[in-house]
Structures are given as C-alpha cells and as structure tokens.
Image 1: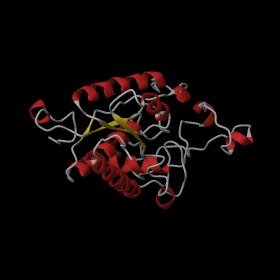
Image 2: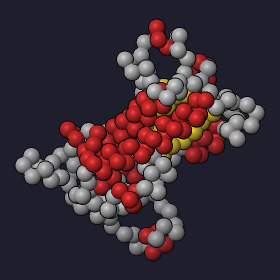
Image 3: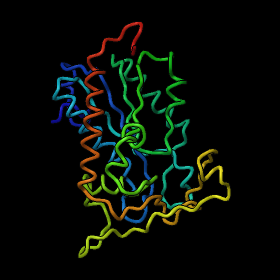
Length: 261
C-alpha cells in the first residue's frame, strides 16, 4: 500500500490518518501522433503526481493523490477517431463536485495537476474563488512548471506528441510506444504543423481554436525522433523536485485570513 495514493489505501488507514493536501491529476483520451498511446496525458499526469506525492510524503507531508480523470476537452481534435471530448463546463462541474466532497471531509487544499493542453482551468479557479473553503492551486506541468528547462533538455520545441512527451513516455510507459522491434525507431511522422494564412496567428499575436486535423497530419505537433528515456527522466526529476517541494510547503502552511500570502 502506498499511503499517498487514494486508490490503494483502505478506510482503516484513512480514518486515522487525515490528509492535508489533495492532488487531482487531469488527463485526456486522444491520439498522440502514430506512436504514443491515447492515454499519454493520463499516464503522464498519474506518474508525475504519484512520484511527487511520494517524495512529499517521505518528507512528512500528508498528501493524497486522487484517481486521475482520464478525459479532457477535445473539441480541437474531434475529427480524429476516438478522441473523447468532455466540454469545459462538464469538466468544471466534475471538479466542483469533487471539491465539495473534499470540503465536506475537511480537506482545504487542492492541487489540480493538469497534463492536457486542451484543459483551461484558470477561469474555473476564478469562478470558484470565494465559493468554497478549499484553496485551489493549478499546475500545468508542461507549461509553467517546466518552461525554463525545456530548451536545456530538448532539441526541438513541440506542442503535442513531440520530443518532450515521447521522452517521458520512453521513461515511464515504454511498453505502449510503437517502435520498430529491430531498429527501435519510432513509427511516427515528423509532427510537422501547417501554418494558417494569417501572419498574426502564426506569430502568436492572435489566438484561435485550432482544428487539429488541418494543423497536423496524424495529430502530432512536434518532432519526436530525438526523444530518449534519459531526457524524460531528467525532466521528471525536475518536475518531481519542484512539485513535491511545493506540496510540502502547502501541507505545512497554516490557513489564516491572509493565506496564501
């Protein structure tokens, strides 16, 4: 039994060992180029959350990882077969319901660990602010948490199923990655993205909801072929150190009238 994973503990343990912080991994079910599994985002969220909670628990933090939500917003990828969409309002209601359960049970600190770019939870946090006693925090590990180290680890910037995600997959769930059995080469395309006809959109000055079937060939947006398990483990080590340190601080922090300041 890993005491920091709710799915593995029993009531005999939980009733005598109250938790201070809950971590909710948010994934998705969608294609990732031709080589990564549909559960990539969920596998990533679960692995990062479980390792981070373990590291925090071993430092004395009473943290618990909730079961991962394996669905996300997929309106961009609706044209790809079995890309399973849950609309933002539905996801928001799920989180609201779970937060209400936590509040009733006395947990006042929640970290949403998001692994899917189609999920945008900041508006939800703003909407829920002042409506719940649970203090909510958002961690998009693939954006802010790793932004300053990506260029140090990876050679190719990517958006989806590129070098970064493939490296994490090789490190954490290699059995699900499609590779040539003899050469070990990925059975994937190059993840080339098609530009729009608007310079402002291509330069990021104007944002759109991107139709993924027009943007990409096989859903990959980023060159995956220089990914390695070593790069994935290097990134994972950084993520776990940063997230677990925060979880320890959060678990130890007193909630008063000026929290979190």
